[in-house]
Image (tube, one colour):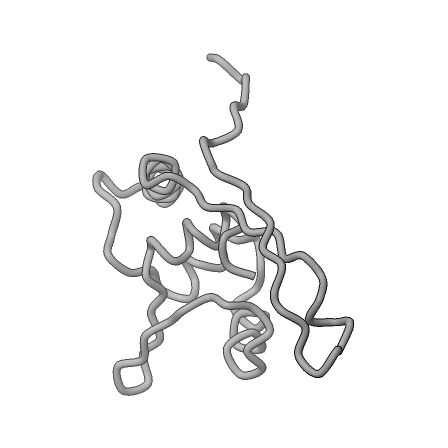
Length: 112
């Protein structure tokens, strides 16, 4: 088994926003990392393998998402209520589901 971990292909750029009212907070560079679609697909495949799916599911339950992220279901509830992290979710009635692609992007560091 090969345990060598390659960094997924990505493009890293720095963006400097124009100063708003000369506020120094707005005049700092923002680093953005853009993952290739193939890198996100590899992460999505790894998620489905970890959870025992033959093919990646469209969405994950909070329990599955907590297993993938290593966070408790309660922590995910706090993230949803506070907006602490940009981890999109869908609510149908009382059911919460996380799009698998969004979880993969979160793991890749694209969503913070």
